[in-house]
Image (cartoon, rainbow, N blue to C red; front, side):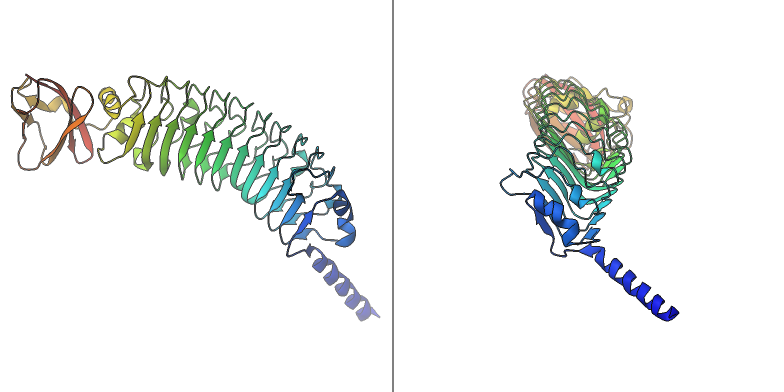
Length: 403
């Protein structure tokens, strides 16, 4: 009798364990009745192996609640909650701890909060919140410790990242676009590393990057585009590495690049500063060191005087503390003024590379002085010229007057 009881116990246990997983091909809930019927059709199922879609392709689903999904703990695939025009909360997902793929919450016009996701710890791929017009913050995501990426886009009333209290590393790109109620980035204070790009674009009233002051490293592009009220980059003051392009484009209120001072120039692949109409102060240490290497590429145009051209920034950089230099006090150009040949005098000046710019900032001469420290300027018109002298990657800048 005892052996029969034990056998029966393990048989029931086996059934229960097997019943915890279901739907390897996923499921679509396009009606409230299917939500309500889930626990009856799939008793004991707490882990869906495939993708889950809640809503419909026409983005006008009338699903009102998700209470019928309260047994769910894990979704191995994607979870998409799309176009549910009457869904005000996510109540019913309070036991969900993990989404293996993307978690996309898209175009749910009346969704007010994410508080029902309080048990969610991991999103394997991207957490995307887009076109949810009533959503204002991320309260409810305090347990989240892993995200493969984050996209916050086109949420009309989204004004705060408050809620991400446990997340310190984002394992992929971060996209913050078209959120017209977003003034700053408060709530991202705990983020120290982004293993991808950071794109902050078209946030029309964003006036500060306050909130990402702990971010010290990235593994992709940093793009700030069409944030018309953005006046300061001070929120990026802890950032010391990218591994991608640095793009500043059409940020109409930006006046200075202060805040980018500590980025390692060796981690910038290309520098792009364009159409920032009020930007006149670009001579911060990281930018100066990047531009000091003539092989580093840059697109600089359409900004205010001081940042309109590469040569303007390079000229301003000559007095910046921390810019690589080869003991400029020991380097002399003789004679200066000159009518022709000049000699570059100083110590350890073998193999000098010279760049010369005319008064309009145009590069007019590039020459390697491998065997001589003399440079013939007789063919140049009279005027003042900027001379960049490179020994390896170290730079000294000198002005030369041609009579």
